[in-house]
Image 1 (tube, rainbow, N blue to C red):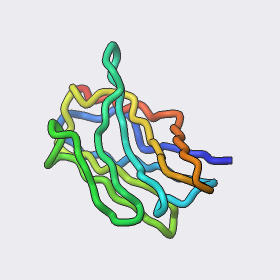
Image 2: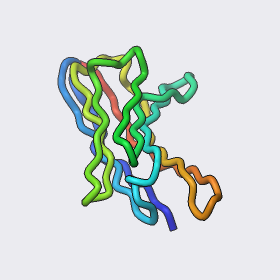
Image 3: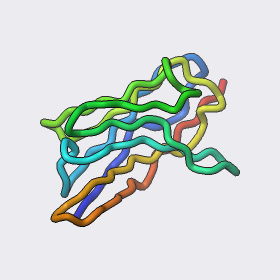
Image 4: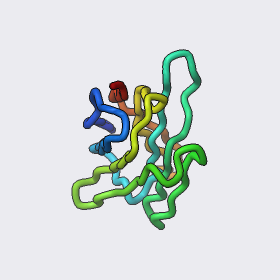
Length: 120
């Protein structure tokens, strides 16, 4: 059974940094496309960052480039999202996502989400 367990969210002051973690079980992240999405109240879910497990290639939401970094630890089978210079508009639930193929069949999994609130 695949599980994506996010952690690291919380209440943060503007300008601070935060690192979110997504611990995966039941799949190998180096064989998947791992992404972080976020959804703010009343808004659609949007991509924050993506990393391809087999190549390490990354892709970022243009609005967040330069402030966020996605990375992986294949030994821990964990994906991270480092966010710097936090802004109130970063307030959202952040979700981990895994997409790939297993035995020729596509799969997609979501974590339960972790709340990030940026407020003074």
